[in-house]
Length: 401
Ligand SMILES: *Cc1c(COP(=O)(O)O)cnc(C)c1O
Picture 1: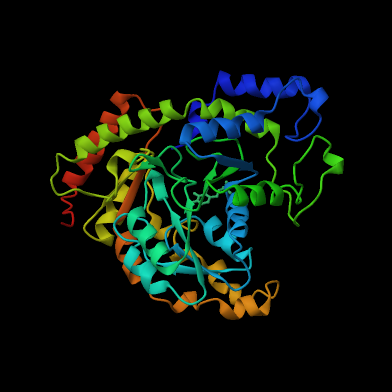
Picture 2: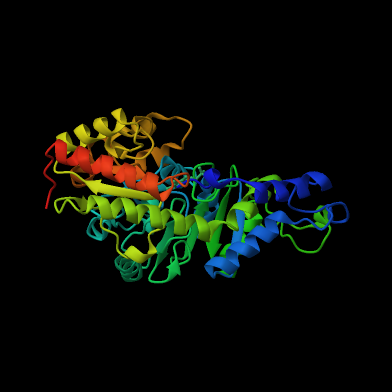
């Protein structure tokens, strides 16, 4: 998954350009910057690569999500449907826009179950946030159909699936608005950073303005710019964008390496006909950063997880994870008692603690996920694959059908 494993001379060169000019801010200082516009250059490179007219960089994936939600006019008391398996930033963004996170179950795609989304729609629902977890996509055709039927926005949180596609379109460019994260462990990194992607000029204008205190970015005198809206500072710095430019140039290489290593691993594990893999709606579009397996049950999953740990093979068991699965989000479930939120918002929050997410539990309980490392050689991937294969056989684990 992480682009930081590919950090090298290209990133250093772009950083050095910025250091030589001494201008670390993305706007203004035209005469002093030696022609360096790293943020702009990265936005253009993203637009070109993923074929979208508007990309705007921000300080993080979280701030990208906040600006994206606000650009849709979603706020106080509105509901956004999102999956129980995601990263905490997804509900944080919804919450700090004044809106209400409503969780729907995930299915064997490890992303939103369209049936569960349908059941979660209320008169207050404004958007579906599809989170393309672990490098691969949700069932987007079904989600688009639901969004159309109920007149909802589709937001794509593609923070973990940069470079992935669905039916030949890049993830993040398919819904009304999409977001990338370039934090340190993502497919490509800026150190910290994010991007908002959209086909809509009005949403784009809102996003670049909102992310810079409402500046309209017209003309070349920053001090004289007007402020069509009230915003915040979600800007990326030129140093971060410089890192990102170096990384972005390696995206194809990163994706093809991940896919190759993942396929080596998967081919070895497939010798065992009982192994069951995560369902991926468009296998060709998987960015290859993770391989997820379903074990028979919770006990088998826990056994295999601890055996892999003993053998120093990196592996995630999301069911116990504090960042990614709703079961352990106690801080979030306690928000009803957080007096710093408006009472009106607290009163609208569902009783998350007592909601039934057993359908998600059933999936996550038996899931283990192997991250694909860019540092592996093909031989290393084979070696790891064979070790896991042996562990599965030795433990005589029977996989679910
Ligand atoms: C990383 C991530 C984010 C947030 O990105 P940051 O850049 O860390 O703020 C949001 N959603 C998902 C699914 C993520 O994995």
